Image (cartoon, rainbow, N blue to C red; front, side, top):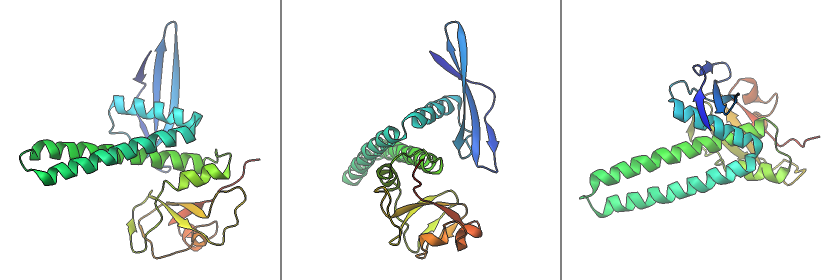
Length: 213
């Protein structure tokens, strides 16, 4: 079973997504998959785009399992990164090789971080989460906002909301998607909620757990 890219990826700037279509060739028939990948992916090569589409489809089928897999790979990569940095401090004779290992592991860390970002946002914003406990597990993968830290557009942060009344074990940590650069200074979740100060001016929006049904 082989896949190939059908046409060029199309960037939809207003949604900050890239439309990618791949074709699967099977004996006697062809089938197509068309998805919207987060961010600008127009410069990615065909192999990377095909894998991204397949990962996205698997995520749609089982977002919780995809998160667990990505998180496990991220933890493995972070461990390798730490080992490589220790070796770099111990000896300079292997400087070049170690630098390459650090660079590779950092790239892998960034890659799995992006996968987690995309899966969490897709599951929460797409309202595909069946249980509050699943929401809690997902948002705990996104760091709490740090006072004084500067964030970029499209970053995800979480903010504890002590006033939130749980309905299904979803916890009090709320996911916030930023739409533009922003320095966090302790703003509450209510500022990002619907009709909140920072939601109204386009800074970002809070995605609270919403029970299905």
